[in-house]
Amino acid sequence: MSNDMYHNLIRNRWIKYSIQIIILSFCVLFIIHNVRQINLQIVDMDILKLIWSLIFIMVGGILGAISWWLSLRIFDFKVNILNVSKIQFKSNLVKYIPGYAWQLLGKGILTANQGIPKEIIGVIIIFEYILIIISGASLAGLIFPIEFVSKFSPFQIPLKFVIYLRLGSLVVLFVIPLFFNKLFKMLPKLYAINKFDIRKSYFLIILMIITWIINSVGFDFLIQALSKTNISIVPIIFTLTTIFIVGLLIVIIPGSLGIRESLIILMLGPTLGNNIAGLVAIVFRMITILSELLLFVIIILWSHKLRIKVNNNPKVLLP
Image (cartoon, rainbow, N blue to C red):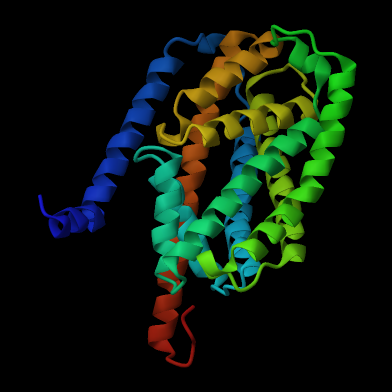
């Protein structure tokens, strides 16, 4: 197959959609298979809390789009927030063909269509990717719940380790923007980086931490909807950041399928019981996929509405 034929094959939207449908179908079959193994008779599901869980996770998705917009602004690239949201929500679905690496690639290709040089987009994607991991890991380190971790950890955790971990997490959050600022000043010619706004990078870290917490609140509502066991928000934030960071690091698995579920059972099983923890893992996967699909549909409908408004009134500028 020639390079042109291969390129056209990759660009064909129906092929991409077909692959996504196949992978999402696999996810659904995975969910159905695991739900059958769970005793649903012991579950008293609270639908209202499930709805709140979905809302908070969708808000987390919107904040994720704002994070990408702010990442571009840090490097002095001004892209309309609506276009950035379309890029973010479309690329969220790409990770199901197969893995987070495809989401990064898809985000880069879609952002390049906004007129930003591809080599700089690669740098910005890596920058945001590292900050997502560091912000989540630092948040987990700052709140490290030693009693909760002791329930599933095979190692005894000394208090001194927790103190050093919390101090180290604070230092990392402060130092990482300084590190990138120094790095980009050393390599401006190689990557043609003309500007790096260190102040906005600190705002980005704060926004990412808020996003982690918002998603954790959604995860908390999910647990409350399926279990009568009370868990404080601190272990829930620690669990959510841990499972997502591990998923981000293993970039080749479609949507971290199976990895998050296994970690949820490992970490929450001793508190909720493996039966309920397994159900939480499966329903969380369903709500995550639903939130991504809803955000994608909403942004497409919103864009379509704006196009109709432009057609009816040419004075209205389409972003």
